[in-house]
Picture 1 (cartoon, helix red, strand yellow):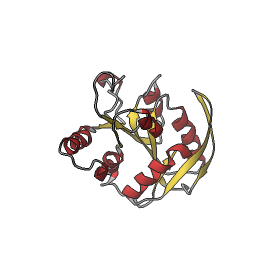
Picture 2: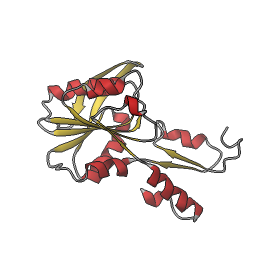
Picture 3: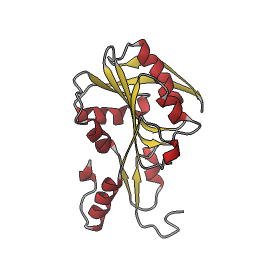
Picture 4: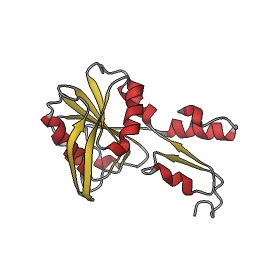
Length: 197
């Protein structure tokens, strides 16, 4: 539909299924917000911090994110039964008595993250911060996550608008406008977009 409407190129941010860009008949540049999210944590003391992906599907991004922060990475072993029912049987990696940053590409209902929080508490983690690119926060997910006492902070980008009335004190929204602007500038000038990564 985009190509039929006249689009000659597409610029995207963190597709839920990266394979989707292969279905376009025009060039597609697939950006991610890992640098913006990492910059938020860069000034913190990360000496005992671990990045954890809620599932193995997002583990590659979590590993790249952990390299940006120079901290270890872990992942949850998740099984999904329905839209609102998941099970995380175990955590792969050492998170005991550590500060953790939960990284996901998107948070919709928050079911997976809430399940992961239970496993993290069993591992006696010290603190939990949550980061994602797309904060959909459907069905009261943001309020449920913010109500968790050991969740210190929830960070997302502005790819999905969150009305001021829905925001909570623990939420921090980062702008990806500079990343898109730089990618557009590079495309316009015939420079490499992949160099951004």
